[in-house]
Length: 184
Image (tube, rainbow, N blue to C red; front, side, top):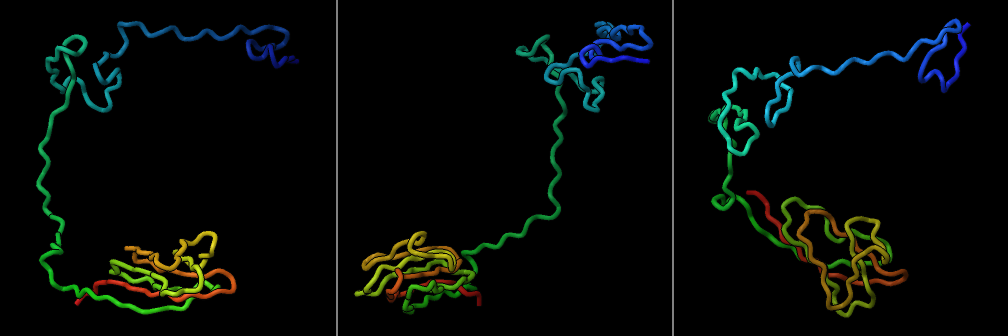
């Protein structure tokens, strides 16, 4: 019956009270059978027969030769990408809108999302009795919103919505100015 010890098993195996020696490892490959060493590539051929590549002279390389590949001229693209020159087209109509919104302590959307909008400005109408806050979604509040007080203004060039809210129990009126382009 074999007896094994965890420590002894790592080095030898006991079988019927006889010790089997540690296996003999392979001897290293002799230089005569070792693959050739190619500068900048090592001993791997990477699927390329080294007999088909012409070595070139290079003074910096070890042994004076560097294995290189051939440069192939790229083919012309048959399907070019269509390009629209925006400055030459007169198919967009630039417009603007202005309006006022009363803001309370409940978040309200003061500027809606609009494709093609290039500018949105939100400014308190004086004399606004309280400070208001603007943000990108309905989660805007006095802690995470951008503060707007009398004389200040919020400007954005994004196409997304703008929400606003005032402090608890207060209200404010803001003027909104938007600029956008519509296709014709």
